[in-house]
Length: 600
Image 1: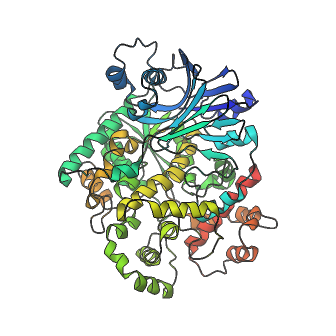
Image 2 (image 1 turned 30 degrees about the vertical axis):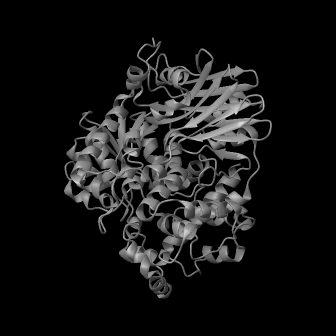
């Protein structure tokens, strides 16, 4: 895993770029310059440690590459049988594939990647990212200049872009920056499954998508019964895990929560690795998933490590949030940070269960979308919700019912946010901005219905804009590479074609994964609701972080430019009629904005 950056017509400081990306690649750094263009690379050596140096050249092509291509040896055999390679590096494989197949090569790749290739003959620069967008590229472009990097902090430090306050409104409303949006003017994130080419002379741009998950939902569906589907899924998942274990010259471990996704990964990985090292986090009270994780660890005899994170939070919170280079409101970033920090003491590569929920229907909120009859009574259900008191416990059945009743009579962006991030929904109205209007149109124009639509939107919005960003920063801040078997090429092309009832069966979520889990996991885990590295946010906001939040939101807080001061004071003083869980989410979202602004 690595950090990459590049510039056209920009005078940037090499050492500043290397310093800002050093945590992504502490082992080596390199630079390549061609006329008005420069490429920068920092390397975390995992594959072909001795010979995989970058930037790497082949004829007229020069590449910097962040990620891993897990099937690159197979690609050499199938597509490059006559090539004499100089190394075992997947970077060299990419160069030869591009030399022969150009952008068609992206259809072959099973991996995570963000890459840049200079073609010295045609004088163009290509940027591309993987199907899910696990490895990001952020880029600034105006009429004369281009700068790109793996992280927003590098972009900010190198060129100091202006803040886009309409984007800040969008962040507050959504809880994340959707699709290509960032908090800066003229700075975008390259969309998943997409490549761009820039003319080095005039910066003319060409963009093309090589992967669109919505199209897969519209293709010929899987025809077999659920038993056949389970066998096919098992084969694909094992292949993905094996590739991600073997594509490393260093030891590979695994994150292990109390849920079935990471537990399945650990169970199957244990078939290929004895004494696999596994890692989880521990909290006091109802959110402590450590005992469930221990069940899987014991069954597969892993070298298990449990981390209690509560003591360091007050000292570390600003460092954690500051690593994102943008306001970041997903509080599970905290345990993800600490478990990554702990894992790095033992391994450099880690497996996780990212993507399973968004592909196979893992959230309880998917249930009503798989049962559209509920929405036919929308008017009555919405009326009932208005007379009910707000819930106080996030994981209660009452909270689930209350949110279900609220979203039944909503459409577009209002319904989507009520079902997902649910931060300011129903308690504060932001004036519409261009970005929010565009997002509402994007949601309404999605050519799918019911559960398929929600799964597709979550893959394109929530997974891409929040969950993968969280894990990329949490792992790479500690020079740890995270690998996600559920986001393999095979599974991404398989899951959308499954019938909806293989994912949601009545009120059972992730039906096919639960069926598969019966062959691998302790019975106690299989019936458990969705679990990740969740946190007791309400307790933290009212406890260890209370003074920091109050101090950040006092006096001339930046958030007063976006949220009414009196309303915010009432929120701080706990005088609003909203649930304590929702209050905590709102305060956390605003606090993340203040920390970002203060650190710029």
